[in-house]
Image: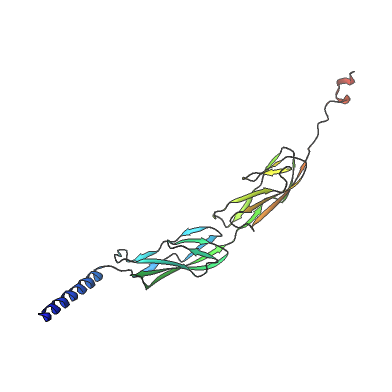
Length: 214
């Protein structure tokens, strides 16, 4: 009797294993993983990487883990979001895991991080009290996301707003600075001299028609 029970148990176990293998065989697993070959970002900018699997009808459960070989240049979270940290290059890698085990299926993207550069349309200028002037900076790389921070060394002489509009307020000199918030070491300056302007002397003797009397 014990032999019969043992035999039945073995048969059930084998059948279960067979079914499990059959179910696994019926599932479609990943054969290939691909990512964009290269990615270019400016400092502090981000990008979302999306891995493409092949074949298209994958049904076997899997997980992707993401890693960077140079986190001083670029980091990546476990959703594939890349953040540029500093100028340089880094390899971002996606690895396939099935049932907690790493598979021989992975892909990588080479990320190049570029520093910001900035120039200004002029370095110096003069304004009369009450006059305004709009400064025009050019920032590279083109298409990057950034924020400019404007400051004046002497707000009582010349102030500047967030759009780079300088307003002359009192006689004197001031230095206007534009700085890239994402990379504060990148900045340009503009030195403005504010003058009183021409003073209207008003009416005098020479203004009296025909030399008339007072």
